[in-house]
Image (cartoon, rainbow, N blue to C red; front, side, top):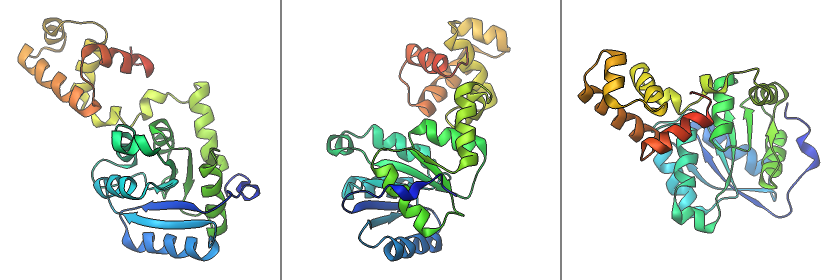
Length: 232
């Protein structure tokens, strides 16, 4: 159950893009929203992967994006990252994201919220609850089911090690993580090579891969990124 979402319905119709890689699920969500959410929610588009999602958001400018966590092309966090970095979408106002996933794992919840989602609900949610959750997110509220809200609170209180569930960090191989930490701490390439018993050329290769995967451009940005996640 979503935590008391029924009290807040938005003024006017909330435009929504539904993003999920399962066509039958998308159609089911759309039908449910167009039924119980008639006059409140308007599903303007659907998308099955990251590229389609970004294109739909750019074309339709929805108020809210219902976003699955695991998608072909990089996942829900990749959609939010690309939308946030798009000058075209940003100029017209970015949508708010509500994760709608079968997963209730802490790492998925925390990674998705840290990626920019305003809420996270599971696919056991009912139609009326989902309509109410969309309305609250559209108005700027954060919406979670009670158990998932606990994960987020635990992460901010330090009960869960946030770095351990960081979806960006999961993009890196174990060796890339080792190189990333040493470089972020100020080690020179030669020192990293000596510490890890690899060649300087291999360090350079790993470093290029790290920066590309994390969409960073310099050692300075990498150090700040790692510091923000308490990896140093």
